[in-house]
Structure formats: C-alpha cells, structure tokens
Image (tube, rainbow, N blue to C red):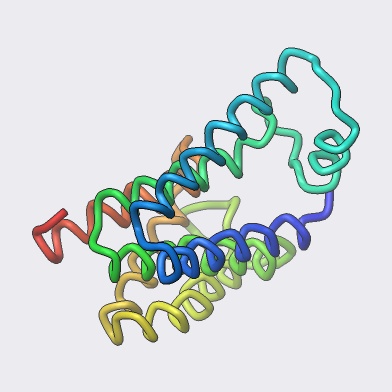
Length: 186
C-alpha cells in the first residue's frame, strides 16, 4: 500500500469535487457523486464476495489499507461529501469539503510517522493535528476568511477524537452540525 498515493488521491477527489460545484452546480455534482458512490458500493460488494478484476484489484492493492470493507475510505469520503453538499449552503459546502480533503490528507501524510503523540489519542500526533489545521486553513480562508480557519481548527480537533467512526464520516457529520449551529440554516 502506498499511503502517499492514497492521500494524494484523497486530496484530489476533494478538489475535483469543489471544481465540479463551480462548473456544473451543486445538484449535478451531488448526482455525479451519488452515481460514483453507488458504483463504489457495488464494486466493494463484488470484491467482498470474491469477484476478481485485474484493474480494480491492482488499484486496491496500491491504495487500500486492508480494511474489512474494500474501498471503505473512498465510500465514506463520497458519502461525507454528499452529506455536506446536501445539508449546507454551497459556500459552506466547498469550504467544508476543502477541509475534509486537504486537512485529512495532509494530517495523515505528515503526522503518520511523527513520534510525539497527542495525550488524548495515542493514534494521532501533534504534527498531524497541526498539519490538518494549517493546510486546511489555506483553502478554508480563501472561501470564508477567518471563519474558515475556525472551522479548520474545530474539525482538526474533532478529527483527533478516538471514536470508532471513519474520519471521513466523523469530519463530515461534525462539519454539517457545526455549520448548522453557526448559520442556523441547512
């Protein structure tokens, strides 16, 4: 498994999704993401049932972490982006997706080999947390100014919580709840 490739794809998917929102609008982007999610679930199910496909197997071999559910990370990322796009306004959606993609991607790339662990979660590092906040603040600030940086910090803190929930879903669900509490509109 190539973690650098996996996280680069993670970041790219988020940035492409943001670009699609600008190019084709939210409804069309959500429709496309739903189709991709459905295809991903079908491929994951087929793989779990033992079906083999050299192309899919080769891709999974390079980027899959060995989860019980093949493609789980991609499935949860697409589900999270659909949740964000359908439950927040477009400006908040692109901001929150940028934080999900860029923050989560860079926190893993930079934090995974660091030795200084967070006191409240031995699976996360200070380098990962700081990377999440710094790198996701860049696009978030460009969309929402200092409010975007506040979202990056809050979601970075939430990402460090040790819950038995995929980070893509944890960040997405938390992002929608925080956006609602701040703006009181979905």
